[in-house]
Amino acid sequence: MGMPPTRALLLVDATKRRDDLQAMLAGMSREQLLWPGAYGWSAKDHVAHLAEWERLLFGWYDAGARGENPPVPAEGYSWATIDALNQVIYERHRDDQLEHVLADWNDTSRRLLALTQATSEADLFAPGRYPWTGRGTLASFVYECGPNHYRWSAVEIKRGLKNRR
Image (cartoon, rainbow, N blue to C red; front, side, top):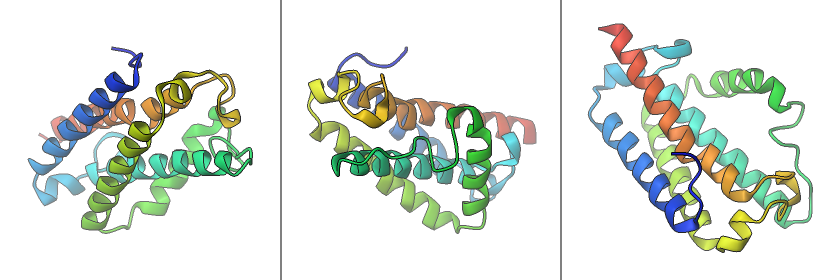
């Protein structure tokens, strides 16, 4: 399924993918959560990555609400240099404690759901409604930073576990 076409379906998708990933993580041992897997990232590293991208989204949204035009995806980076940004995110969080990372993502993912719930369908899906989205929509950014990212992480974590066996 691609990006859901309504706020209600976006919330359903985000909630389900979040819950599914949380259940998968809860079923893993501490050792498994810390094993390096895909890209050399552990499940913990993937979760830290998710939380950081959600924080980026909140930063874009908040800056836009203040009338600013924030750099997207981040200062000094473009979508063409996303791998370098992801490496910086990894390095920033690789030594974070597992419990902190899990709690942090629990918080940021809840905030993502709350933002989606609090935003009207028109504001979520109107192209260019938020200047920082370019010709995109807030919904597309929520989808990419939320449920689609959760799906990607779950696949990569599973691949990492499979490769360890």
